[in-house]
Length: 117
Image (cartoon, rainbow, N blue to C red; front, side, top):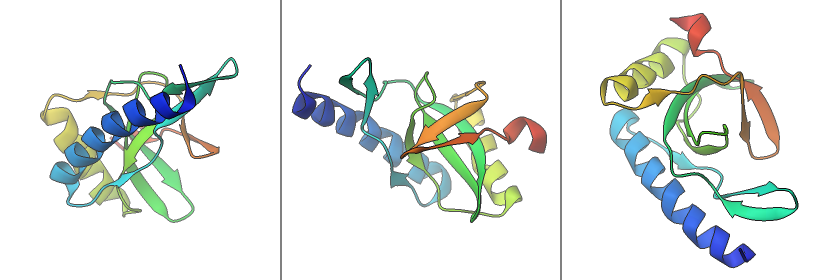
């Protein structure tokens, strides 16, 4: 797949995730649209799985694909606010991401929602 095709498809998928997270939390930022595997650019996956990470700025609720690539994120929040969005996402039918780490931009973060329940 050519890079521009991966970006176009990935942007569509991530934009849908951004709007979904926006409805759940009132704010959402689009993050990744592509991922690189075996030297090839691929669009971000179609799946929406929810997780919470802890950054230097606070707790962030994210939607990721099945491989843990972040598609959309909330702003940095207090722990309780991030978990409230996480709970709303699960109640709406979004499954929890059970992986231990996610990738956002060029960083990897451990998921922390299981520690916060």
